[in-house]
Image 1: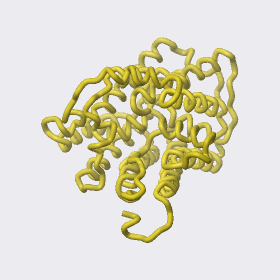
Image 2: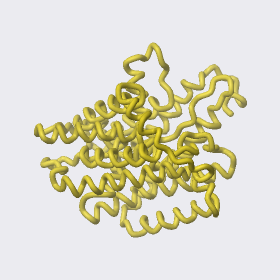
Image 3: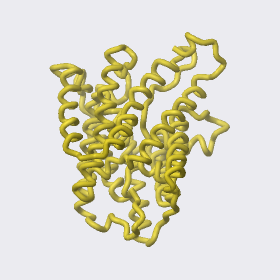
Image 4: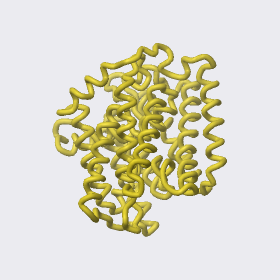
Length: 352
């Protein structure tokens, strides 16, 4: 659309980098203020947990409704996206989701939350993200890739049922059904109105991302990948670009990560919430690093994190994404029960 309307010399890849940066900036600010993180909505004190879950679910509701409205209007077409592939890698999705859920409990934050925290001075988050990105890249293209490929061979042919839109009732029915359940959770959450508004902004970034990369920046002579809000592949791409920038260009994912870091930093600076935090014991260090590695493997196997598979994937009614999100939740709950208070830091400074 951009290249049909205007005669511009900006390459689509560079334009997607800038676009990702803008979306990331908005995400970073909104997530830093609202402490946006699915883990906070699954474990911890009941009142705080409900409020945090209400915030996350609000983002999911807006992402779902926004994506489906954009699809109806013809602005989003995800039929060829990997999340809607007919062959569902069931074992990889379930195992990966479980590992990711376990990892985010051990690190006390999902990848999106750790990205925001790293911008505020949390050195634990910085180191965890480095481990996460290295392991994720190794699972995508490195020494762990054979494991990913082997697990991915266990598939189930879903056919048209790869999306809830292909089931009886169609997209409208399933969007309404999921929407009612999500609204009920939001109503009972008791979350602060400001945080709900910020969560709605985060959710709106999902359909905007699909539209931007799939329609607005589309160029048939120089195509760019269809993408929206996610953190697993973008962190792996950012790591690869940072060590081989002369060989590969920075695209949407790298811009997204950079924008989130900048937004989180600016928000924390204005709110006077910049504060260094580091590891305190060897046991804590091992726990965080193990959690980061689990998220790196799990995020790739599951096809995304709590944002990539959760907001963007479920928002598109992908069955694979729904299963991945459920596996993440089960993995988080099970790990929280197993480790108990050992997963909580002794320091007063919040780590999530």
